[in-house]
Image (cartoon, rainbow, N blue to C red; front, side):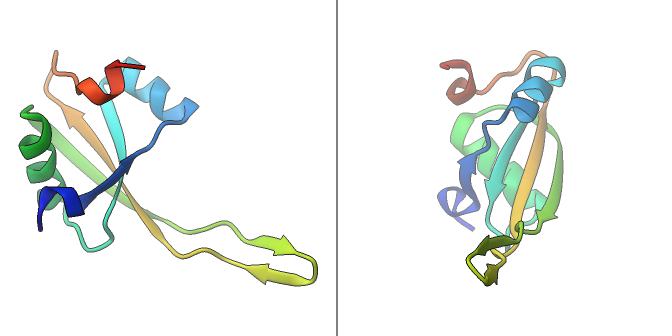
Length: 95
């Protein structure tokens, strides 16, 4: 897969920011078809850093209600990327 098709967006939340600052782990929303190896290759190709480990998970959508109707968004896939010690991604450091 092309690197721009693998990584959809970075996830910026309080929890992901705390993990990033404490442990150097970066969180992304990725394509559901992407494998751990695809995510690793995409991060290396886009930012030229060394990746130590990639963890992926499928997150189901929360049920929402509007009136008498319920809807559930589909599954999304997240990837938590651990970089080697001392490496940082510039897109997260500019905030």
